[in-house]
Image (cartoon, rainbow, N blue to C red; front, top):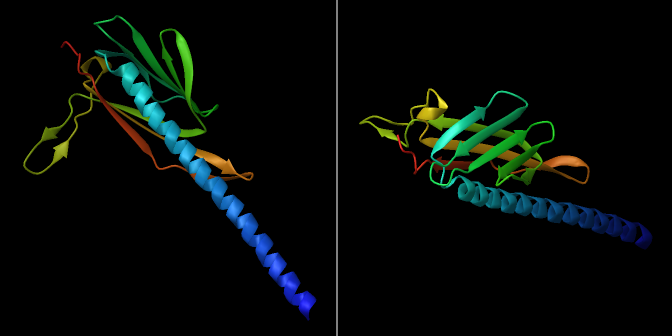
Length: 168
């Protein structure tokens, strides 16, 4: 009788240990994904801060990209999402830097201006072509595996960039 009770307690303790390890791993994954997304927001914001124009954009292929240029410094910055490799790469000063790995989705939208207010709504009119762009909205979502299973998915991240140095 005592051996039966002891074996039940040992099995319960083993299950709790495995559950605790999985939970700790999940929390660690969430924190790492959140940290990397915050760093991405900072680096893209810093690289695009002096942008005055969108020069190139591709939004409907397995590889998406957005390139901006600065009239002040003459430099360009490019953000590339590869859906096959699940990576988000920033190219600035002729150097590539992988910002995110395990990136499942990336989207970019261009708008004419920051916000249009009316008595009944708030809207952002989309830019008909990149040269009209004044506001860039980027969203992405990443995920990770935990003990061999795709279990962790971060909340969708959003970055809004206003082209402050736009001359026209």
